[in-house]
Length: 298
Image (cartoon, rainbow, N blue to C red; front, side):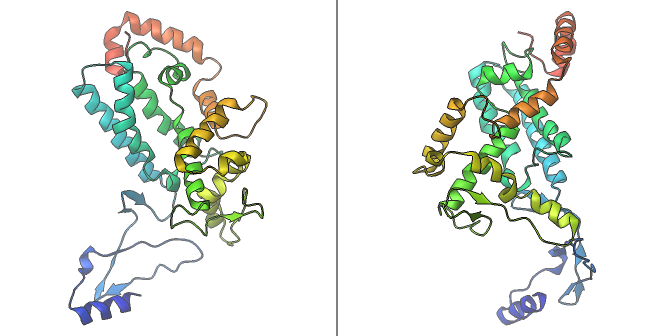
C-alpha cells in the first residue's frame, strides 16, 4: 500500500510529507509491530490520533475520546456560567441542548460504552456533566437529579445514546444511508436483528466486537413493535418510538428506557435522599459554598 502511494506521488509529482504521516499499531492477533518507511523516511508511531473529531487509540476503548468530550462540555458550561445572566428554565434548557449536549453525543454510535459491568464508572462520569448543568437552573438546583430531569423533560444521557443508536439502525436497515449495510444480519421477516458474534481467537478482539452498535442495540431493536420499525420516515420513527415508550406497561421489561432507571439507581442510592436533604440544608446556611459548587439555591 505504501509502495503504491510512492508510485502515485512520483507519477503525478504531488509529494506527501512523511513527517506528517504516522503509523498506529493495533496490538491484536500477534501484530509484530514492524517499522514502516515512506520515501526513505521511517514513519513515526503514535498511540492516539484524531480522525473526524474522534480520538482513536490502539486498544479501541475510546477513553481518551470520552474524556475529551467531557472536557469540552464542561468548558462550555463554564463559559455559559460566565456569559449568560439568566438562569430561566426554558432558556437554560435550550442553551444546554444547543451547545453543551452535542459535545457529549458527537459520533456516540462509535464510542458509547454499553450499560454493562466495567463501564458504569464511565457512564456515570458522562452523566455528571448533565447533573452539573441542571444544578444551575432556577427553581430546581437543589432537587434530586431524577426530579430535575422530569422538570426539564430530559432523559439520562445513557438513554439518549441508545435512542440515537436505534435511529441509526432504522436508517441503515431501511437503506436511507449508504453505510453500515454489512453491520446487521436481519431475520427472514426483516424486522429483527440476528446476532453475529465475533469468531476471532483473540479475546480482546471479541470483547471489542461485543461493544459494537450491531451487538449493543440488538435486544432493544428486537423489542420494538413492528409499527415502530416500519415507520415511513425518520421523524415518524422518532414520534412512534416516543409513543411506544409512553404507552408501554411497567411490567414489560427489556426496553431501552430502562437504562435510565439503572443509571439513576446508581446515582441515587439508598441514602441519597437523606444525604440530599442534609446537603441542601448546609448549602442554604452557607450560600458561598453553593456558589462555588455551581448550585442554584433560588
